[in-house]
Image (cartoon, rainbow, N blue to C red; front, side, top):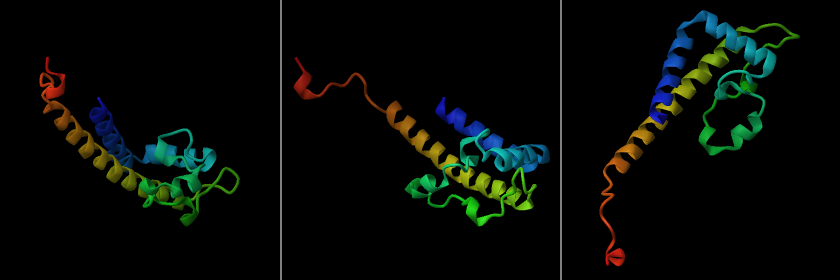
Length: 121
């Protein structure tokens, strides 16, 4: 199930990269709501907390972009930020898929019928 969900995220990322309409929707979300109405890696409201987490050390930081807003208008830099975040999220998601597959293989290789000697009767 987890692997299927992660694969769905990859499909979503690939779709958004090539869909101008979806990019514009994400742009509106980031500029108006701080990305809080879409997928988790677009949420820029808690960036300081995110930057402190070692797992997100390479995440594109919104402070490095000129993000537009409801009051100042849209910015092309917002689209660049979104595309950079999508690339970052794809790398993270692919790593999660690899880890999930390794974990599943490990679980599938367990001998469930085996019992340790100290439990033998």
